[in-house]
Image 1 (cartoon, rainbow, N blue to C red):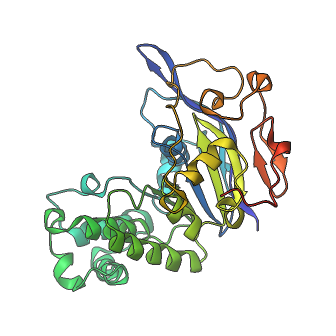
Image 2 (image 1 turned 60 degrees about the horizontal axis):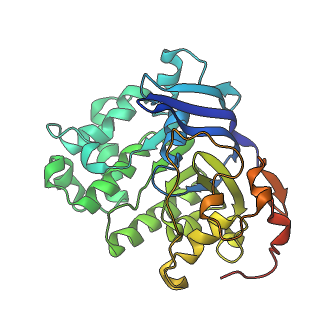
Image 3 (image 1 turned 180 degrees about the vertical axis):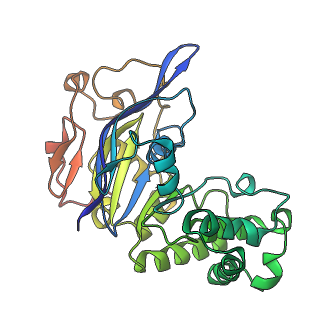
Amino acid sequence: MKPILEISDLSVSFPGNDGVLSAIDNINLTIRKGETLAVIGESGSGKSILGLSIMRLLPANARITGSVLFTGTDLLSIPHSEIEAIRGSKIAWIPQNPKTSFNPSMKMWKQIAEPAVVHLGKSWTHARIQAVKQLETYSIFPPEFWAEEYPVTYSGGMLQRATIAMGTSTNPDVLIADEPTKGIDRITKKDIIEKFARLKKTGVTLMLITHDLDFATELADRIVVIYCGQIVEISDAGCFLKSPLHPYSRGLVHSLPQNGLFPIPGTAPPMHMRFSGCRFRERCADRSDQCDCDIGLNQSGDGYVRCIQCDNWDRTKKTV
């Protein structure tokens, strides 16, 4: 598959009271056309910052370096008018909190229809018809009734589905979803998974930002693991749960309920900390003196891992 997004040497930092806060550091990643990629990690690891960087929706005080190529165009260097034309039409964003994503004083049909009017030049009449169809597609019944309602009348699960309806209203080439299963019940989560599975079949490129491993492995073709702003592992989704390579990845898998709920000891270091060597070493049971050395992201089988001891792990052996 041809690449649709090529991220090179991407770093984002923010000024803070304790010094510069490094949110993501030297991210290099290629996303293929039609691929479903899941980006996983703890809260504060830099997952959402990565997505917002692609969308160019970072706050004004963000310091960003590197490049993000979308079909060959660097999204970080083009004029604001050009990114506005791409954002929402070619690349769409599903925000993390649906309750704050909608205008409380605007009817839902108009909010779902607006991207098609703004980006595709559709008439409001045509866009309204499509908005009602979108509500039906995403199981908000009866769609004509709910189209005329306001966000306050929607349940949390309905709002979550409505954000997907709005994000897909322009048939984007790339859809980035930030924590789409956060704070929802098991039944709603199952429905959201089904909706994304249907989207996947359309050929859209999906980037799923999540801390939900079950959701990630259910849908993704590849898994990207981020810790303290760095990619520590890139893995085929089919291999990840059975044989994660990085100690942090293995900790995430071991912490799943079906694997005994063993938490990773300790906490992630603060964003303003200056790093030398492995950023996970203080929490790692397998650390050694070698871990004080910096290490890049190195190929291991079909994936990549940032661990100096990765040659000691046998990917053919099940670790959980």
